Image (cartoon, rainbow, N blue to C red):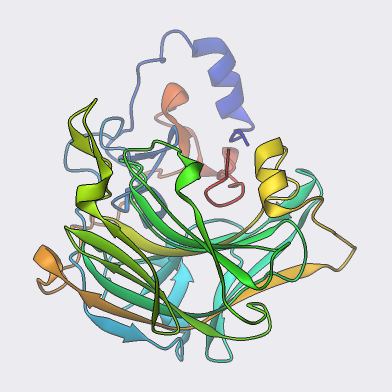
Length: 345
């Protein structure tokens, strides 16, 4: 969906679009994300922040090093809304990146919920992303999916949004006994590389362990400790471009739930099942019991906090980069409402 700006900012947009078309973020709201500026983690976190459109080359926070750890989701601090994140990855393992927030810790799980958004005529889900980065290593998540109805998509991914490199497990509601594995390189959306695997049970009724073991030379997917797929980097070589179509970028581990059945994209709807059934009180939930992360390669350095800008008292409202009014009161701008996590195509 497009982000909306109301009040005085909208008036300025109409009056000054040509004059300010090249404007970027200012020093009080230095970080750019999807055309908007602010100073908190929702905009400044590495991977979300656009370094080209931000105020300067140091505005975006630096990537946090990987941390070998087990997250049991036995503390509310294990997953928090990203706007509450102070910049210390050792304090909060996962961050809920969308508003309204549908991800939280409850009953010893990371619980992620999707409810109906009447304005968009589809479900509004959640994405929880790791506060540490990850580049090579092994990650296992014990997951109970939301595959209780057609169209509901659950995902466990390793992704760099800037480069488009991704490794994933995905579950679609129309096939509750199945998990799908896939990978992407350099944002090339080649769905032909997806491989299905029958887990041997109902993924929405039972917890299973899902593992991605990623090295510079091979990718291995496992379910309940059993290898179900192996990809060797050498087998991804493309002689036409003289490149290996193999994900290598520093990334983040994430979980998400979203509405594929009502996405409006025919291919996505066929893949996920459609329509996604909704009633007045319908809510779909995905549960993550624990995550075990073992860093590998050059990601074994101790975690470090990003460089966080000091608090400021001047306006830090969410400004569109094409309309940034330097003296507009913060009450005149509505923060952007995000759509479904990582929409499919």
